[in-house]
Every structure is written in C-alpha cells, then in structure tokens.
Length: 295
Image (cartoon, rainbow, N blue to C red; front, side, top):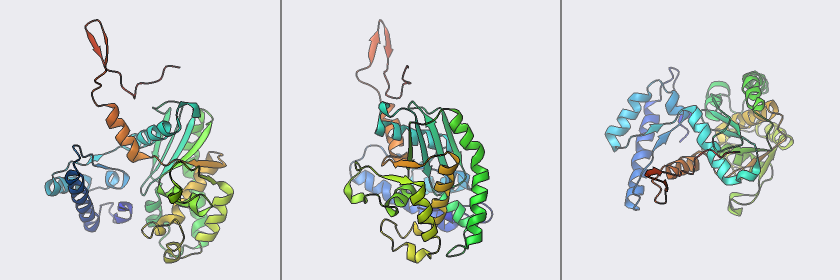
C-alpha cells in the first residue's frame, strides 16, 4: 500500500493514507469472508506503527470495518520473517542471515533456529528514505552520495551486532524490493515459479544503481519486473540493499519467496490446538512446531 509515502511532516498518516487503509481492510475482509475463510488476520507494520496518529487511525479502521488490525513491533516483524525463511530453507541451511526491505523499515536477523539469535528493525525502508532523502526525480548524484555515506554510518553498529552472533552459512533477501532488484540484474521472472533459484550480487547491484539512478520514475516503471507503484522507491531500496550487503560483507544474497506474510500464517498455525498432543501420565503436553530445537 506504500503507506510510508503517506506520512506528513508531523509524522502523521495522511487522511488519504488512512482512507486507503480503511478501504483495503474492508475490501479484503469482504473477499475473505465471501470466499469461506473462517479466520481473518489483519496486521500492520512500520508505516502505521511509527505514525503519530496510529491509535486514531486504527480506531477509525475498527469502527468502519469491524476489524482489529494488529500492529507488529519491529522485532516481531523481523522474527516472523526469519521464521518463514527458516521454514523455506530447512535446518540443513545452517546459520541464516536475512534482510528484508519494506516501505518504512529494514528488518535484519541472524540465527540457526526458528527464533533468531538477533532480530533487528531499523527505520531504513525504501519509501521512508525516498520521502526524506530523494525528493528529486531523478535524484541528484550528490544526494545519492550523501545518502550512501549516511547509510554506512547507520548500519555499522547493527551489522556488528548481527555478525557477532556468528558468520552466516547463507545470506538471504526477502521482500518485493529484493525480488525486483534480482530480476533487474538477471534473475528469472516470477512466471518461472517460486522454486527457481534467484540471487542478487553486489557487483550486479552497483551496476544497476548506476543505471536506474539516472532514470525518472516513469522510465523505471517501464522496466521488466518493476511495478508502477514501486518504481518511485526503487533507487532508495537499491541503496539500502547495497549498504546492508557492504556492511555485512555479503557478496551474494539468495532470494527467498517467503517473507512476513508467510511467517504470520505459520506462527498462527503453530499455535492451533494440536489434536495429537503427547501425554505423559495425567499431564497434557502440547507439541508445537515453534518449539526450540535442542542442539
């Protein structure tokens, strides 16, 4: 919904942004219910979470649609995305470092289990940085250079915290931003299916940034793999990806098709009553799929 682009100078979600949220929640709730869905899970992330009028907006959504929207904390957003990535790659992948670029925030995690050792959320989303840093279209070269330096400084501490937990066996990128960047650097299109291996390299990313940063939003929207509604924040997303990979000394990211949405669903399924719960004497023990693995 690109709500990160609908934040005003006072940090409030604009009336237009709030109305689009109400309409989206109402529309998709109706689709879910008329399709026979028994449960509806509505959740919001960084743009709503950080808006100074968050409570007011969500109260309006509830009053209009009857739906309670759950606001995920940044840390939980990172953990749930990490869960989805772990389930996709399995235990044999070893230690996984994951990056996810959203509109309002950058999620980073590192771990060997379904609960990562480190889960961070930084206010470095593509929509947020486009609004705050790259108002010109196309953005100026000097402005891009200043943003690159600023990102390096912002990521130095978090990168050290992540790597102190252990060097990853595989580095992964999730989110629409990473999928678009990978496609623009030669990865297979979405039509090839989710199981086709896709990756993003630092060398390919640098060349791409040099190319797209000189283009207007309208021209970027014409590129294969770039949707019109994401074209405006593509440069900022690419710069965040580049800076993150540089800070973490990562040359290649594998692109995972599962991310936050799948993580939310998986966690909900984990918490459903287990009909085959193990029993010991008179005590009933539920065996949940999110139990920590004992090494």
